[in-house]
Image (cartoon, rainbow, N blue to C red):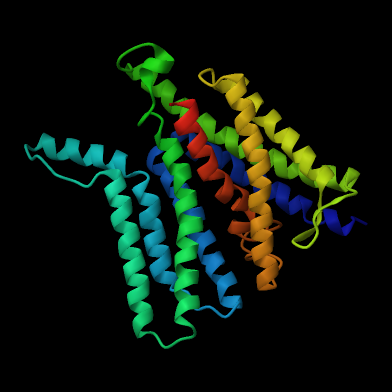
Length: 317
């Protein structure tokens, strides 16, 4: 008889066997394929987050939040859209004026905040404070944080310092392909670090766990498991760097692995705290053996903005 703690492993392995190759392919493709992937997991995670808030008595504006959540995600691929729209209109002899990326994001967030408050002015369902807070919080910590993952991917080639890494003023077509591949493998390195961290923490905790990490929030997690996860997160990032990221120094790879190993586990604890407060085990039952989309990508929500800040302001600075 299979122990209860291992009963979900076949389902988890089957889901991973199907999902991981697809995620890797979309990440390597980048552009709109990667945007669609992130917008999908962001939108579903936001819906699951709103369900958690409903269990606490809030009545978030789910449709408004998800629509503006997608627009927030879109702000991080806006530069690509802007370039392509400019080129098309220039091809027909029209000079177009458009928002900058930061202006577009600011407009989206301001409109969202104003509309969320305006709608609550006329609603009579529940607490206006609780409803507006839940609606706004979901977009800010789910959509915005996931959006920074798109922003990181779009640094390659948009925002990539060609002279610093390639020694030329402008990138050739071949070099642009290489830069795009670096972007894809950088994100895959982050994914691999999270996945290996989760796996190592789980099995390391089962084998050696003696000291509870944060019993009030997640009783089964241990310091021993967390250390295993941290170490293997670094190993995963260094392995991807050695295989496909010659632009990345060993030091930067180690630091990225450490950031994922620390903040990824914090992200998991944050979601556990929210679920415990809501009185539920999983954010949903959408993914067999894994729970909900937010359950599966909770570490990424917390890691994505940290990784973006380090890559843009340190690695590529």
